[in-house]
Length: 336
Ligand SMILES: Nc1ncnc2c1ncn2[C@@H]1O[C@H](COP(=O)(O)OP(=O)(O)OP(=O)(O)O)[C@@H](O)[C@H]1O
Ligand SMILES: [Mg+2]
Image 1 (tube, rainbow, N blue to C red):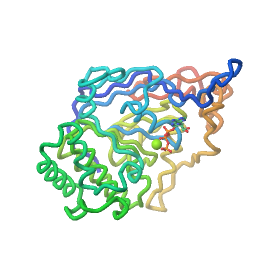
Image 2 (image 1 turned 45 degrees about the vertical axis):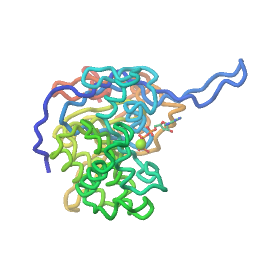
Image 3 (image 1 turned 90 degrees about the vertical axis):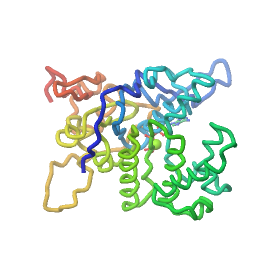
Image 4 (image 1 turned 60 degrees about the horizontal axis):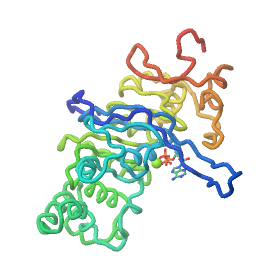
């Protein structure tokens, strides 16, 4: 089902040349070398106001790291993150607090995001106390109950502790908490991966409802392309810290170009067994980020790899139909 939300073209979040490396081996002696793992290698995308933007890719490709850098949980190694034209990196004090309130992050693991010893209702309104102080306690409670109900739960659930709730309910609590400061943007990091299929669909529908009701801008992170197809207007496909393709829903799902995107889409189960499709099954393991392949990082698993692919790294290029893709086979003058 396509959403009927009017997407404005005003840029809301602009990520430019974002890189992130983590130190994995310290220099204990002067002759020893520090060792880094390069997790993001120059990520660029722009999320427009009101849209649902998808970020997909297999486990370990850097989706959560991208979100965590946007959320200032990690500082970027290089690059810029602008929110409504304000640079977020290096922002401090009151200004930072004010902007940070507008972007909320729903963590991948709802159990880890909740305190096991505090009743969930208190955890839902806790951000209000942090931002506005303790004064409006009664109002906070009421607002939290309203939100709990808007995510399909009851006031009685609020008195419970996280372990007394199901995985789907915990995910709803985390969503309600993220909504309490009335953010303009919500970053949902695989909110559904730990849940079973029917609950996944419920959470996605809930996100669509939240979007419709509150006009919220969404960055939806997932490795499940069927969910992304359902929810997202435009999507970035990541592989080992790089963007390999970026397109709107129609283009990406009806006419994927990058061999990696094709294989991800081919892996989506089709409910009707009579429908046959081109098989491009993804083979092999994702290589280690510590020893990334030369040239195009996807080439060892790519069904159409050419000799040049192991030598030259493809750039993310804008194609005539407006999408972006990074693949030498798609570049002009290079035949696959
Ligand atoms: N703090 C850290 N220190 C060192 N390496 C890290 C750190 N955080 C993430 N990584 C590495 O960065 C890579 C990307 O991790 P990330 O969590 O961003 O992946 P992901 O795309 O969200 O995967 P998943 O789908 O499993 O959630 C992984 O190889 C991970 O081991
Ligand atoms: Mg992740």
